[in-house]
Image (cartoon, rainbow, N blue to C red):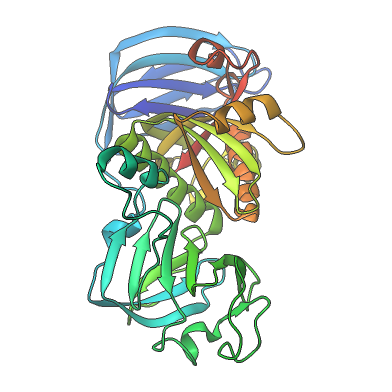
Length: 394
C-alpha cells in the first residue's frame, strides 16, 4: 500500500493516488487527516505521515475513483510550503575577482586549478547578431567578430561557459594537466589547437568541452563543477546533477524568453529530444515500502534508506518529451528546429543520451495513467500521437 502525491504549489491543489493494492486486499478503509493517511485492509494496516511542510484539506476531497492499473485517485486542496531551490545557476554563483577550481563532475578530477576570474559576463542570446542589425542605423560594428574571452575572463551561455585556458597564466602546468586535448602534442605549447577539438577528462574519459583555434575553451555546464578555491569537492550522483542543471536551464529560459519548447541537441548537431515544459511548481511525494517497489516505481534516489512510514519529497519540473533517436519523430523534429519559438540546448551527445534515459526512467516510474498526455495535438497541430510525460527531480 504505497502512495503517489503530486502537488501544484501555485494552485495549492493535489492529486493523491493510493497505488493499486495487491489482489485480494480489497475492500480497503481509508482515513485521511491533514497530516496522516491511514489505509486498512483485511490483511494489513498502514499509516503514512506527511512531511511537516504539507497539510492536506480532507473536506475538499473530490473526484474519488478507482483506475485499474493505478489505484485509487482523489483530488483535494493542500497547503504546501517547501522553498527548496534548484541548483544555483553559474551566472549567479560565479563572482569576479575570486579564485575557482574546475572539477570534472563525473569523477572529481581537477581540470582547471586556482583560476582567478577577473570578469564574469553572460553571453547574449544565440541570435544577438541579427538583433544588432535591427537596432543599429549604421553598419553592424560587431559583424564577423565572435565573442572570445580574454585572459581570466569567463563568459556564460545557456549550457556552456567560455574561458581562455591557453593564456600564459595557464600554460604550462597543472591547470590543464588534468585534461587531455585530442590532436595536440604533449607539450601543449608546441602546436596550436585545431578547430573544435574535444577536451577529455584523463581519468574517466568524459567529454568536458571543446577548444577552438583562438584558444577559447567551451566547457559544458553538465560536465563540470566549479567551486571556490579551498573548498572540498562534494560528489553529486550523476543523474541527480544532470536533472538539476537541465531543470534550472528550462525554468530560467522559459521565464526570461517566454519559451516553453526546447530541442536537446548534441555537439554533433543531431537532435536527440524534443521537450515541452508543462510546469515548474510541482511537488512530488512518494512512499515505498520495499526494495522491489523502490526499483520499480521510485522517482527518487536514496529511497532505500527510508523506513516504511517515511516518504520522499522533491520539487519537480514536469515536461512532455519526444525521443528523436533512431529516426523517430523526424518531421516533428525538423519543424521544431525551424521554429523561432523553439530554443535549442546543446550538450555533449553522450549527455543527451543520459538525459533521455533519465526521462524514460522517470516516465516509467509514474503511475500508468500519468505517463502519457494526448494533448499535444490541441496545443500544437503537429502531432496526432501520444507524448511521453517526464519529471525532473530537483
